[in-house]
Length: 342
Image 1 (cartoon, helix red, strand yellow):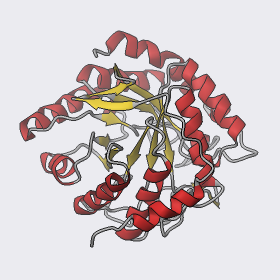
Image 2 (tube, one colour):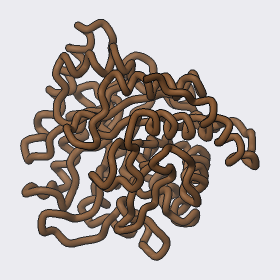
Image 3 (cartoon, one colour):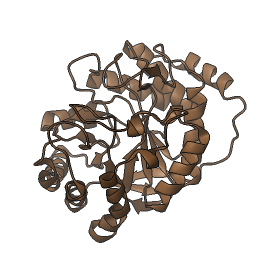
Image 4 (cartoon, one colour):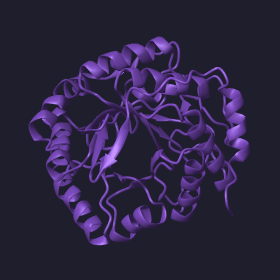
């Protein structure tokens, strides 16, 4: 089944009739295995900001000011998300814009653009799994949501779209490579130049890399590596292996670590050195981006929801991070300055 996006484009034109036509100040690109920002090589150094579409404008502005001052140039935000027990999705299960979160997501992207920050806008298939708010029940709804977002984001060059979070999990989140190709076509019909990817769980095999590169035709890969205590020491070698395998396949693209391990999740509680070791491994191995992932506590941990809940009445992200995460934030930029080779 092929996705039709004409109606989606018309619908978004109505929703955004009052938008300005200003050019983007921050332009993301890809050059071989590296990202570029405004034409210059750049390492995407970022942080999870998953529930950002629900955040008040002042929260976003204050967080992005502080993050930019610390060298952060990339954030990840979800288009379909639940903050606590509230559905804060920017799109409906049919792929239509959902207010006020759709407009708030666009405003977040605008603020990020002004601050020199790239935004990952992530979609997820399936309902009520992994924090998603409105589940996209089939490929038609998924295509429509992607096209609606692509049309709304056309004035911004500081954005890419993750077409399917952890698309290889065998539950309601699963999105086949063939479906990813349809979603990519729906996006490119609206915006031929929009960068796209899809994330996966664990280390990618050669077959999985071929699916991403040859079928989905992703512009870069986003593997979510394992979250154990041995993971940081393995990141450099894993990155080199991805690059070696892609070279053999015949298509080299950036390796972007958009969701590594985090605090308050699982039996291993990473410390400052664990995060920095992982970042250094990514840099030494030739990765193009890395994220300080953060979120709600689970598995018996207690603490704030961090980026998973940024609704009015909640502290902003910089006030929810713990002392370990704040220390990592302070030291991330120096790792890039020392170990990154453009």
